[in-house]
Length: 378
Image (cartoon, rainbow, N blue to C red; front, side, top):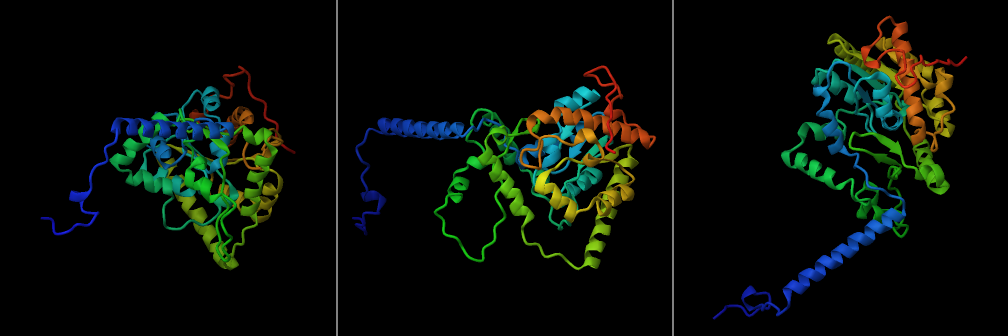
């Protein structure tokens, strides 16, 4: 006889007499309806299937660095060069491969160090300089993408590849459409005094398997959504920051220059080269960058310390006046033109230094069969 008559005793809990096949069928139908409804909702918000530009996708690109043949180019940077460089146009203009390793929201300096110390890459490295990212000190902890790549487990490797089979099919499979992200954004949450949170960057890009990333077209024709993204950048601009004393700032900057110069020397020692690019920005964002990071105290010392070629958009009339809907990134239709001009200006920068790079191809544009004209700003 059982010692317990509790209803929780598994011996005393009868299995309901149900039609389990019908139950399973109903569960499948409800799940399918729910998923289809969620997909329809996000497609109505103009979401489209795209690849998730996270650490896993970045690691798949990073794994190809040592496979690059001579003549290849690697792009490092924050989101501006991730958006602004059009990979197909680069290949068309130069006749050489290009690998996109820029990562949104990151400082490219640790990635440059990684490339210099952990690879044998001997091609051309293009480093994007977004002042607030590049010239900010970094702590000892590696960026999340590098930590992921160095510690990637077999299950993570397999999960990324399985995910890439689904990503081009489902619009709601996007970071911005994640359920908890959506719930967190709802207005009914009470305001918690004294709690500071970084501004949330909403979806504004579309990524392909090659990590070719373009601005989401919604920013071009939806003024309210564009203003929301702009307000996020303004929130970052106006965040309270407590700066260290001037002598500490100077020491940090000198250390920064020394570290970057060491990385450039390491790449040069095996036949590679590095060039720095200051991509376009505009509006209040450009005003804030000029005030906080004047080029004579940041950009110019960077080029002097490294001896590297550099292209600053303010030096060239044909890199100005481009369409940056939210002040920080080129709209998708502008990126091929920007890329062609960038290739030509980089060619000329290396020619002036007496060391032209084969990675940039010849000065004869394959697209037009004519030498691209360079219009330098007065």
